[in-house]
Length: 156
Image 1 (cartoon, rainbow, N blue to C red):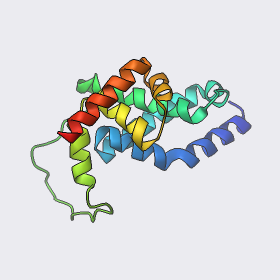
Image 2: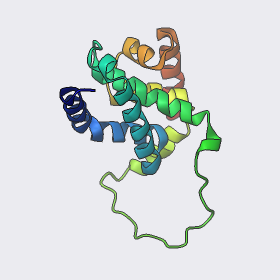
Image 3: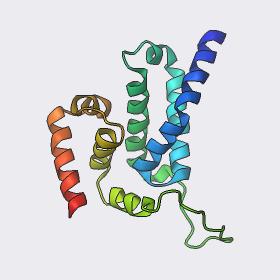
């Protein structure tokens, strides 16, 4: 990659890093895993930077890579670290900036991975059903049914 390409890639990542972290957190409900997902997605984006920057919508391309990375990692539980039952040292409790974050995380965690991804893409990132279908590699009808079932599950 040329210096100009490298610089362009770094600017692209820097401008979107926090959004990707929040998106990954909404998908997996864990900041450490979210950081890992973002790192893996950035690596994939770097390897295919020329395709990314020439895409019709580089942001949607990047979100697609991040979302699919999360879905792939969910299928490979043996690659994840195992948490211990108890921690040796307990950190001080962090003050939550949003009081209902825990309840939102619990609600999202109660959904299946695809429903969670569909609802986050549709309602958090405000993607259309067609854009969501393209990102996830599923049909628009599947997006609509997953949206309906996911919202019904959240209401229950």
